[in-house]
Length: 194
Image 1 (cartoon, rainbow, N blue to C red):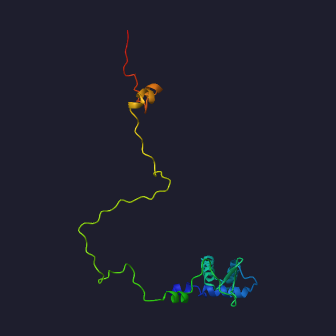
Image 2: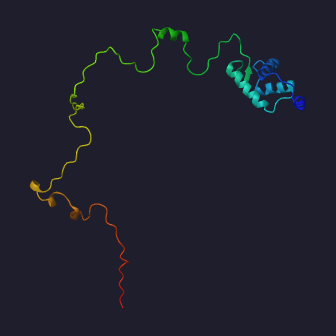
Image 3: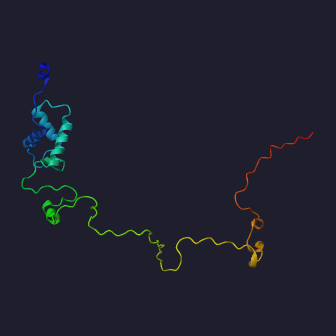
């Protein structure tokens, strides 16, 4: 264990503290960018961990999100104490005091459906339920029924005359209806003559 204590590097201050020291020391008018902050920390503290650039980026982002630093034109600046608080994207939250005054009109209702009232009058059930009436569809006003019309039956002979004269058949057009039957090869019947 003594060897571990000897090889252990001297303790560094926390990254947010090192970042704030670097920004104060650089004292640039428009703020300091990430590479300038990193160079200052490396020159001041020397022996840094292996993932220094990733740690620095992560801490800069956390400080920017928490409002400790302001990120403007790729530079990090200390926030102005007189500036109004920065508003994030999206709709701002509603003030809590106003909501509690509006909705605090009575005791809170429990969740779910309320239980049946035991004092309510009970209606006697009839043994036979009344018949249900068919639903009447509202007409559109045009007088025509909705949807596709039903197929009408074709006349078969009778008063109109014979079927051959009134409607064309397969014999008059020369082409039968439907898919033609599959043609079988005539190669199976072979006759040999001598």
